[in-house]
Image 1 (cartoon, rainbow, N blue to C red):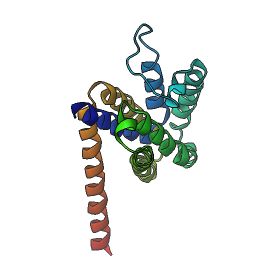
Image 2 (image 1 turned 45 degrees about the vertical axis):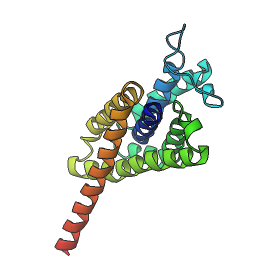
Image 3 (image 1 turned 60 degrees about the vertical axis):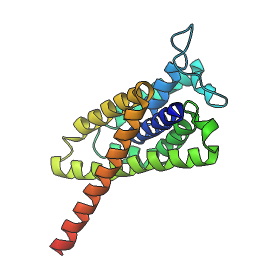
Image 4 (image 1 turned 90 degrees about the horizontal axis):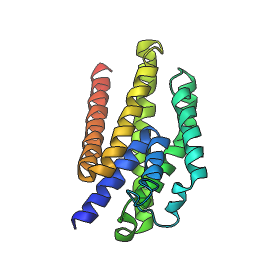
Length: 193
C-alpha cells in the first residue's frame, strides 16, 4: 500500500515538474535509471527503459540547454511555450506512466491521461502567468522567473524520486493555490466591471 502511494506521489511530482520544463524530469529519471552503475536508483520497465539509452540522454541534454536558453528571452519564450504545449504534457504522460510501480497498479490509459492533465495544467498556468510577468516588468523579469521555474522543476523532480509522498502533496497544494489564485483574480475582474 505504501509503495503504491509512493509511486503515485512520484508520478504526480514528475508530471508536475514536466509542466514547467519537460526535459529536467526526463533527464533526471534517465540518469537515475543509469546510476549508480552497479545498481541503478530506479528501474524502468519497457518501453520506458528507452530513456536510459545514452543517445536519448544526450538528446535530452541538448534539448534542455536549448530550452533553458530560449526560455530566458522575452517574446521568444512565448513562442517556446506554444511549442512546449505539446511536449510538456507528453513528457508528463511518459513520466506518470513510467513511474515506479504505477503502471502495474493503475490502468496505463488512466496513468497517461493523468500525466497529460497534471503536466498540461501546470504548463497552462505557466503560459498564463508569463505574459503578466513580461508586461509588468517590460520583459526584464522573464529570465528570473524562468530560472525560478527551472529550479522548482529540478528540486521537484528530485523530491519526486527521493520523497514521493511529499512531492505528491506539493503538487496538490500547487494545484489548489493556482485554483484559488484564478478564482480570486476572476472575482476582482467581476468587481471592476
